[in-house]
Length: 137
Image (cartoon, rainbow, N blue to C red; front, side, top):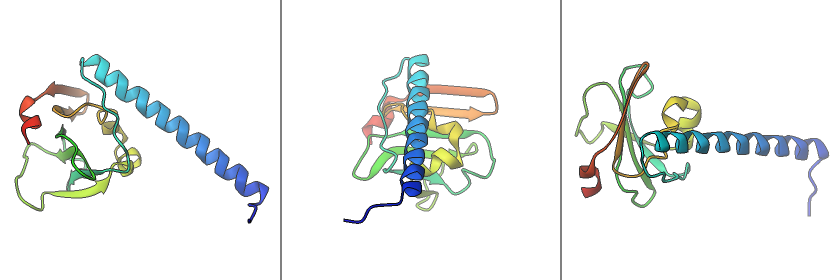
């Protein structure tokens, strides 16, 4: 059995602690959003897949999200930017949810909302609501 050098173990331990703190903060933020909107909290596995529009990280507003029931490796979240939601086959790309933690942290606090919930963000404007039709997918 190979033993890792002490400095490697220390660095790994530090990274694990930072990641644990980041995840703890994220869970707290998600629970706070659910509490504010009287929504059920449903933790999301960050290793699952999210549907993200090609323009989502472009700076276009508003940012929109909706959560269908999870299925297979998909967590149910679809995120897009702008006023228009497209039914086109290539409108969404798939990525692991953990990529959003770094790339678009302002939306990750909403990803604990249970299936059936939606959100819209535009600058300081925030709207979060339940849409029962999302559960009929």
